[in-house]
Structure formats: structure tokens, C-alpha cells
Length: 301
Ligand code: SF4
Image 1: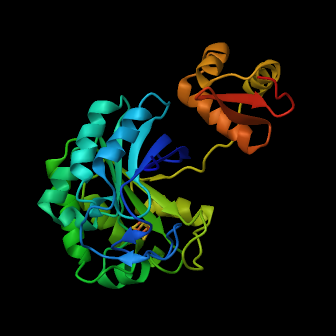
Image 2: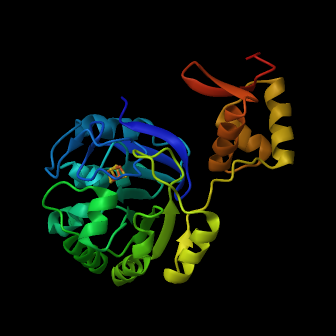
């Protein structure tokens, strides 16, 4: 066990159960904004990093947990895993939620990789540059990667894939923001379902700066039809918070019991529990193999 992580609250995918097919941190880019830090293994060679049968067994074991997407992401670039296509295909038969793949787009130049990624329901590629100079500055690619070919790979993928494509553009102050018009043109030419603009919000690999809110708003004029990736709303409605505290002060409850008692969807139940746990109001414990939540003031089981 240990190939799945979360579920985590994702700003783009809701409650996301992550699947990591890589060794930390394997990627063919070394983005200056990467929240994982510097790339430890910079390679464009695909390989097997984890045992597929064990990953699938873990997906099977956790298939009934509440999540909005099963998301292939993690310690680097998922398309570097030679097992991606097979695991995505089999995972779709196991879980009820849509399967998503987050990719840096670089290997979509390969028809084989495009076929593998197309096994997903939703694909979230990224494109931060439209010129070789900006590509080198922001993404610091492994040798042999050519930005024009990557953009063409995205166009080809669009023609072959009928599922949702949500293209992310990461904008970094004084690095690629001055190229925004060129990137916007390239992004539009790949015809994604959504273009999602992001800036640096988590601790980056290098000391780079985000665009401020006003600058991001201005980017919406340069990227027509695009959206800003929203900041996560870390609030719990006051009434729900009170009811949950009252319930969990009386007895510890599973997520299913919380959903039923407060008439919440399972993903809202886990989202609110995570937020209140983060705020130190409630805590969790395993009992007889089941996960229970309880108010911090009352530890009775
Ligand atoms: S592609 Fe993703 S994992 Fe790789 S360096 Fe860039 S941000 Fe990090």
C-alpha cells in the first residue's frame, strides 16, 4: 500500500484521490514554480516505477471511499510511467468516479502516449510557454523537448480525444507573463474545453513571484473564455459546523453516519470534516478498521 494519497481538496477537481505511479521526483521538466521542489531525476525515458498489480489492488481496496475524481498525478510526470494506460483503463472499471490525468503535455507528441492518456475521462495538461526561450526559462526541460512539437501534440490529442480537456497555464511574474498573448494564441489553437489560469500559490522550487489579483484579472482579457483557478473556500457553513460539533460531541461517527445525520453528500461530509480537523475542532481515529471522527473536547467512542 502507499500508491494512493488523499483524498485531498483540489481547487480544480474537488475531492481528489491521487494515484502516484512514480518515484520522487521524476519528471522531464524542472519548473521553477514546482511545489515539489527541484526535479531529482530529469528524464524523458519512460519506465516502470511501481508494481501495477499493487497499485490496482490499492485502488480496489479504497474504491468505496468518497472522492470526486481518481487523479493520476503525484511525484512527477505521470506519462513517464509505461503502465499509465493500462492502470487508467483498469481503474475506470473499478471506481465509480471519473478518472483524471494531470500531465505537463510534453509526451503528447507520441501517438502511443496520447492513446494511453485518452483512456481517462478528464485530462488536465499544462502549457506555460509558446517560445523556446520562455519554455527554457519557466519549465527548464530535459534535452530533446521542443515547445512547437508539444503544442502540436496537444492539437493532435484534441482531435483524438472526445473527453474533457482542461488546459492549465501557470503565469509567473516577469518570467512568462510578458509572453501571455503568444501563449494565449497557442492555447486557443489546441482547442481545449477549458483554459484555466493559475499563478504561484504554493511554495515554489525557486524564489519566484505570483501575479496579483489585478494582473490575473487582466489576463482574462488576453485569454478570452479562460477562467481563473479559484482559491479554495476553506469555510464550513455555520449551521453545518454547529450541527457537526453537536453530533460529534455526543459520539464518534463514521463519514456515512455524518452524511446521513446532516443530510450531506459524502464529498461535502469529508470536505467539512477535513476543514474542521485542520481547524483543530475535530479529530479522527481508526476503530475496528473503520474511520471515526469525534469532537476534540469529547473522546468517548
Ligand atoms: S511538470 Fe509538474 S512535476 Fe514536473 S517540474 Fe513541472 S510542476 Fe513539477
